[in-house]
Each structure stands twice: as structure tokens, then as C-alpha cells.
Image (tube, rainbow over all chains, first blue to last red; front, side, top):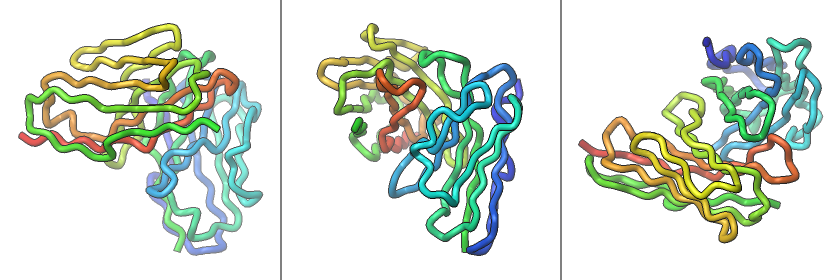
Length: 114
Length: 113
């Protein structure tokens, strides 16, 4: 089992640029979650999908953020345009159906917006 | 709105000591509670998951308890080792929020040899 795979691991870019974060969930998992972690706010859920369909995006901070899941094995989180306050570690997680199933996390993407 | 608090924020203990990490939540209407471990530069690893109908779960040297009515959970680590050094986070799944987790701020644990 390869686990949840995120890319890139690190991203440094200038303010105003488009940023795309990628996630490959564990095969067979039907839930996918995007989180953001900062020192100030801790770990926050941004959006989650069930069977490739967005279920709750209430955590997405602004319209500059968008997420897609075109198929069961791939998801993207896009920020356009990026701002320095978007700097954080972004995690992707996946799980089987059921709130009693633990979520499996990727190693995250550390994003720095200059 | 559910709020999850972890105390202490940081803890340093000598190797071999038994220790307790605390987690409290404001809304007792939860489906389950999970404890995670996070190593520096890594994602979260699920340690224990306690359903709302359960009182505790055990895995090796770890024991987690849940008192849903009082909004509290503890993670007990027996005979701590330097390899236990990490940040420990608890998270709850509200009854009306499907698979959405609300996390505490974490306790950063250092076990000194």
C-alpha cells in the first residue's frame, strides 16, 4: 500500500502566481479530504469529496481556492492568485466509507508564497 | 460550533515515565474521537479511534479513554520512549457532520533519554 501521495512536497512561488497541489488517494478509498495547517489556526478542513463529488466546501477560505477530483485516483487544490497569507502546509487525506474509518494522511505540501 | 482543546500544549518528560495527554471538546454530540500522531515534516498517523458508545481503546502502550458526557478524552502512554516524541492531536467527528473532523491544537511531546 503506497499510502496517500502528495506533490510537490515543497513549493515556493511569488505572490500572484497560480499554485496547483496534487493528491493521489489510497486505491479504493471513496473519501478524500484537503486540510490546511498553520501555527496560528492549527489543522483546518478545507473541502472533502465522496465518490469524486464535493460534499462540503465550507472551509475553503476564498474564491481564490478551488478543488477538483476528476477521477477516483486524483485530486487537485488550486490557488489563483496566491497571496503570502496562503503560506501553510496543505494535507490530503483519504478514507473508506463511514465515519468510523480512520483517515490516512499524506506527508503534505509545504507552500511558501513570497 | 465545536471547539477542541488540548492541554498541555507542550510536555517534556524523562524516558520511562507514564504520561497523560488531555483533550476536551465543547459539544458532546460526537460520533467518535480519534487520536493522531504527527512527526516533524510528516502527515498524521491515526493511533486510536473511539466510537461514542465506547469508553476506551488500547493499542500496545497506548490507552485512550472517552467521557462523552463531560466532553473529555485522555491518551495514556505507558513507559514512554524517545521514539514517542512527536505532536499528538485529538479530533472529533460531530454527529451531524458526516466525516468532517475538528482538530485540537495538539500536544508537542518530547521524551528525553
